[in-house]
Image 1 (spheres, helix red, strand yellow):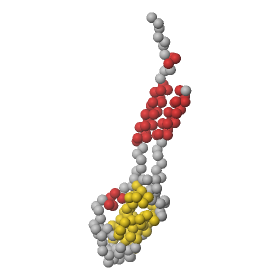
Image 2 (cartoon, helix red, strand yellow):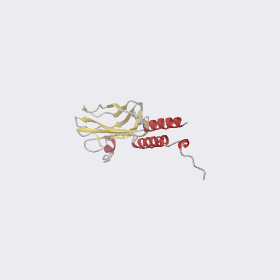
Image 3 (cartoon, rainbow, N blue to C red):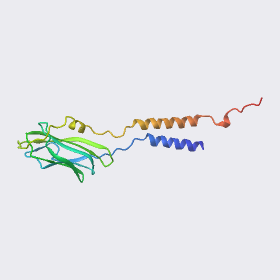
Image 4 (cartoon, rainbow, N blue to C red):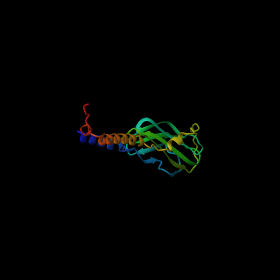
Length: 178
């Protein structure tokens, strides 16, 4: 019976101490392509993933070199892409596409892509971009922390070791009758 308990505790420690796999969605492309030089603004901008993202809480913004929003309306999920409409662009320079979606496994995925407008456009910008809209998008999610699993695994292992090393009742000295 003791060997069974020790085996169960050891297996539990291994399972609880094992890191969780974090296979999040990854970006497979964008339109315009990352770092592309374009002469005229696109009708829409998209970021494509290796699997379809969830539609809840999806954001996609296009911020121009002037610090203003150039995306129009709300983003939408189309297959494996998040898409937003873009009006006629304005100033020459680098435009930042900031995205944040929830992957199929429930983890948030965010980041930025850029393209450069090489010829002046005649578009009218939207409101000034939120100061932290691009900042949040630049940090990738690290997933579930490992330390709680290590602590639980250590406690289970320590309990199994203490149980195994204790003396059985039959090896203890019997009380003498007085």
